[in-house]
Image (cartoon, rainbow, N blue to C red):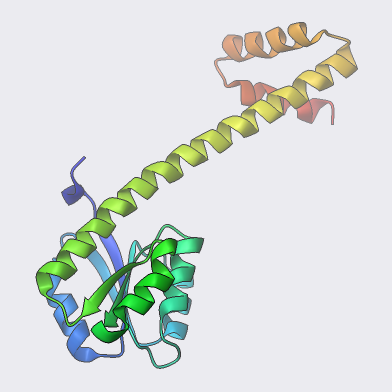
Length: 194
């Protein structure tokens, strides 16, 4: 699936109007919508709680703190792609601190081409994380179904004195006969004998 089919939401955390104007002009609306701008870490944290973003661009330093803690928190607590802009004389030190957390760092000044390459890299990474999140959710749902079915089997064993094999067969047969999932049957058994 090509990246062109996706639209990415972006939060730009920057007090510099010149930077904000340059970033806005680089990002085609067909691929990046909405693009929101805030000037501080505090505003960024509030905005992120209100609305999730795919990508966050942080132009350091910020008025209330430098911005590295925000970048690290975003990468460790969510799947948000984070791009940190730092002055060239601080680049090596900041890169060393944030790279292990998955924060992408760019030395400034930089070119529009480097910025766009980095943002596209974050888009690709975001898609990979989305697929992993879906797989994780699917696995968690399957584990939950197995727990429910096992709980229902133990209820059938205790209440109706079935063997484990008979209880398993009973749940499977009920699911097939009623054209519903094993989970639905298990939930019904649990509800009945609660």
